[in-house]
Image 1 (cartoon, one colour):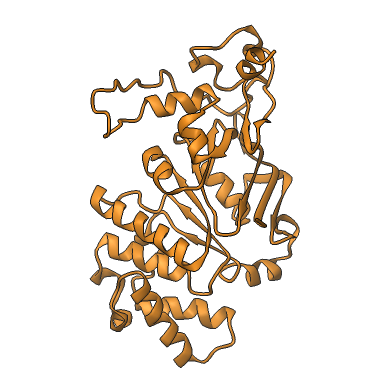
Image 2 (spheres, rainbow, N blue to C red):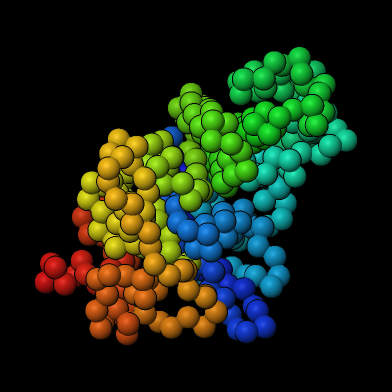
Length: 322
């Protein structure tokens, strides 16, 4: 398969009064054509910062200090503002975390979707309206409701509108940044099922950012697990579930209830994500890891391939394999 997106050694830092916060450091991954990648981790691990870095939305006091982000061979970090404007929506789009804030309350939903189409494609207003109705129907909304305003929709319906808007110009890659946060459990399931269905139907490449591990493992092809600004494990969903290599990944799985095995004990992870300001150069998970040994407190483990397509950053893997 061909990679639609390739991220290499991406680092994004923020200046603070107490020092430099290394929010994202040396992050690398790729997303293939028609693939859904889950980006998972606790709050504060850097997932949204990765998405904002890819989209070139990092503002002062933040800065992308290193790395490259190639979308279909073009480095987004080196693209001009005009090149970015032409790429956004058409090649790369985002489903926002909160559709309530993403939608303008004084414009109809149809006008907002049509605006994206008319700005980026050479079509008439009639053609844009026809596509808008089709998009609404694609996400389960009556096309004739294009004249409705955001306040006339429930939270779940607003999120469907946001999804329709993200698909307005048939992008190759869609980033869903915790797009079900704030919705009730039933609506979350419906929205996630919709995203997966559209991904298959339209052969989309998707980055699904979430802290919901069961949901991610249910629908994603590949999973990248982030901890304290770094990816600590990257593998197929099958390997994450059945051949987990990093202690943090194992701890996340153990901390997640399993509905198929209600008697299994759920074990919480002690402690919290470390402060990323002036963090020492060592394993960032060692203070919460039951398997940590002296080397973990002194050195930074290399993010390396432990088997075909499976990457991990842990000294334990090296010790076990000699």
